[in-house]
Amino acid sequence: MAKAFKFGIKGITGYLEPAERELLRSLFDDVVSMLEPEERTNQDPLAALVGLDSAAREPSDRALRRLLPNVSKNDDAASLEFRRYTERSLRESKIGALKAASLGLDKDELVLTPADARHWSMALNDVRLVLAERLDIRDDEDAGHVHLMQDWSQAEDVESYLALVYNFTTWLQESLVQAMLQSLETRR
Image (cartoon, rainbow, N blue to C red; front, side, top):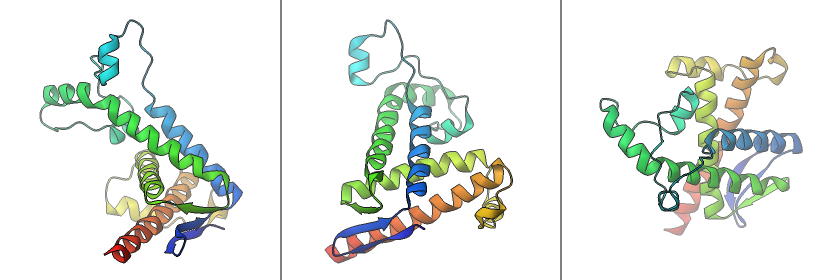
């Protein structure tokens, strides 16, 4: 069974069972797959080099829209223009954090550097955003309903399983953030 992240002499540490590590690896890989930009033929090499994407559009997948939101709710043109200049680098940053976190899943005991902890925090946040969208969590009441699901033996369908995974990643991220805050307090 997983142990919460803690800050101590070795830094930020945590423990995950092999099945929990495989679950997280799978979740990280799924989100990476969602974020990977489509390969385009005949793309301007200079535009690709600096991260401009003239073909960028608002994603049709709601979960991907949560990961790559519009900059303005009321100005579609400004959002699209901003997306063309920033989406590629945002995707790459998120993919980098997810892959970096995934690299740490080779051992039961996790020992995180400050950079590792930031990658893990970003990766878990992105996984939770996708799961929240798949579970239709829109407000505190929806979240409360999902948090009632605590027993893995109760997982009877995809939604209940996703709720349990969401709760697990939420717990893991909360313990990580607490450990990160403790590490900051000791540096003062």
